[in-house]
Length: 229
View 1 (cartoon, helix red, strand yellow):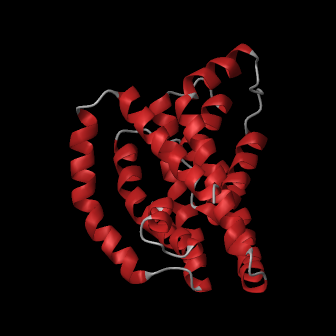
View 2: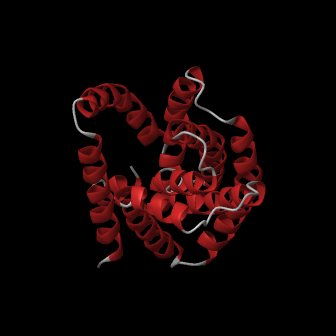
């Protein structure tokens, strides 16, 4: 959503990030509810992630409020960070299975999960607040490396459930800073209902690998377009 707003609709990057965060907070509530209904949310992991992400998101918002208003080049730095995260996310989507296989083969996972989970939450708090990207493919992949015995569906549901309070806090902070377009947000939410229905029907008739590859390609192109002049 953020690169689409920036590249196609020429929305200011910080406004695109803030608007996308509130949009994600609202739409992910539905997804989290569906996963919870299927028992696919591990609230212990959500709490561990949130204990790292919420404080880091709050501190990042303070830094953004100070830095963006003091530095004329701040938006350019956010744009670069967004482009890098999009490319990294596309790589995570394309090579997720290989990364998991590599992690299992080389025993990257430590028996103690609390510290890495809180650390992952802190990292996500920063990158999501700055770019609105990172809590999806990248976060889920790292969670799968940390919790090898938990089913993928439960990791995905947990990741989405954690994204709700994180996106809400970060989006609300951007709103207070003045980087949320309410009219744009309202239009996005109205369009999301038919979009979700159409997308669900389309994805249910398409191979998972095809959808994953197409999404990775879209993210990679968007990221490179933001990075290249």
